[in-house]
Amino acid sequence: MKWLIILLVLLIPVVLIIARYRQHLLTAWQMWRMYKQMKQASQPPQKQVKQRASDKSEQLIRCERCGTWVAQSEALKLRAKNTYCSAKCMEKAVKLQSLVD
Image (tube, rainbow, N blue to C red; front, side):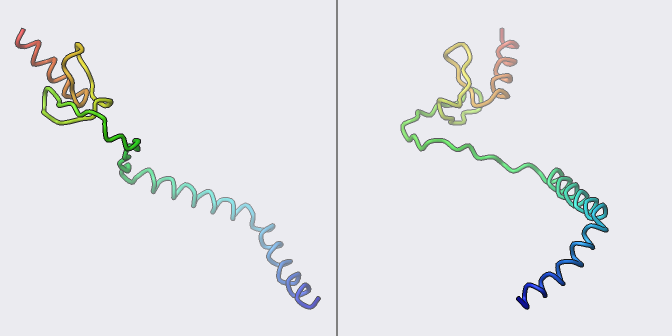
């Protein structure tokens, strides 16, 4: 019973202080959240590693432009015979082909 009275005596001032300064506390909390959001937005984005099933039987295909090996599921195909590792390589190859033609 003695501990309950001590707890109550300590809890009442805390509740009164929170009630009195709740607007200030809410403002401080919102400023803290904004600070965390700004800090997170200013950091460079983390590189996302694609999580794939460990399918070891997936065939690798060589890029026609740069020679990089990519998985068949990630390769970009043009005219059903040419494969490229990225849209950038495909665009460069199309530009070169248009200059040759």
